[in-house]
Length: 508
Image (cartoon, rainbow, N blue to C red; front, side, top):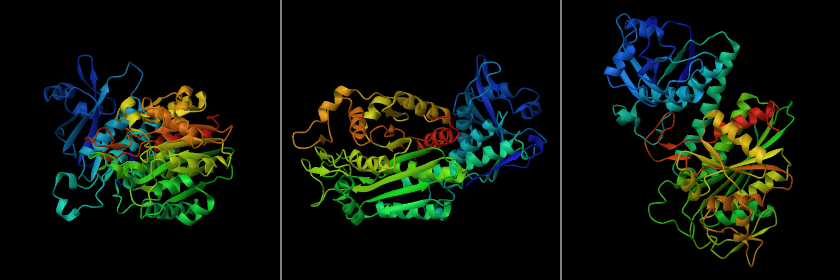
């Protein structure tokens, strides 16, 4: 992974492959952002005009390369767009810095070192730039012939080192900001690796083994329930979904504890390592990316490990509900009735509405420990994608204040999200003549119906939120900002931020 360093060196004398500067979109043309004063001076104060001549506007994500001025030890200047110039004295927000740093890091793949002369006024800015660099430099090459691809553009190694100019190497707050950025980004990138791993190599057993190795490394207690333990415990939802696959299901419990913790959070993740739809088979064209249906479990796993690495003063339990949804003679059928871990019975009307079944069991297991709050994360419904698009996840909750707090945390870390309702009238559509509830209801508002289903398996009196990340979990388009093509690791930073706020006593 790219190394992050803080530097007080002046840009002209720094040995690097490139110097990254920011350029904003001003009312009258591009504006050179703070941090690049020495570079602008070397161009005799004409850098903005030169950039405009080269076609730069300062728009977000825009990259303009130009030869470095005479006397610079770095041969290249990379100007990256920050978007609209902020109001006077307002400064650039963290997300603008994060995205710009991500674009620059991806652009500089194959370089050994780059100096980042972006606006940096405090430790928070350093953390945002550091996160952007580490997330933007990400690549997934595990299945490529690296020797063959080394000469190809997409085969270049990630940026080796990013020196953040204007940082204070001896300042504890700056060092802590970079340490946090490193821990969170490394775990988020681990989640991306899991999401991108093909399902023939990442089945429930393999996922559980990876979690066991990470738990051992970071001092996290782990319990893995295999098929026999799930049968003994009566986990009908997980067993029903996983029954059609030769790869048997797992329920993984990760427990991070701190001796000074006063609060307990439970995170629950949907971990369908491959979703064919089961007997209710998905139509052609909808199967190719279904390795990403375990993105919720990947996010929960990464967040628990990050909490441990950061030493947060909060107890965090992660539940990974792992199964593969396949059609076979032993698969659950439309019309079957499953008895869930809670004791409730569910009539299965659609085997492709399987995520809510595995989550139902895991939510009840989490509820039995009486945590202060539960947050589940799942690529749950196509309906949420229709509602919010491919970059925004939906938030539902049984408590309006908690839903708002989760939304604020997501926006704070730069993960687009939107609060969604749980309309009571939609619950009636899941009434069943043969069971306590059906796993399908009204078609319209399907994402909200799924949230209402999950609410049935949250213990009484427990605060709960549901994140439907179906849209942003897997990017099928081109990379943007610090987001790569493929698995994105969305929701990891929101969960970590919730844990930080809870540890600080700022979340209920």
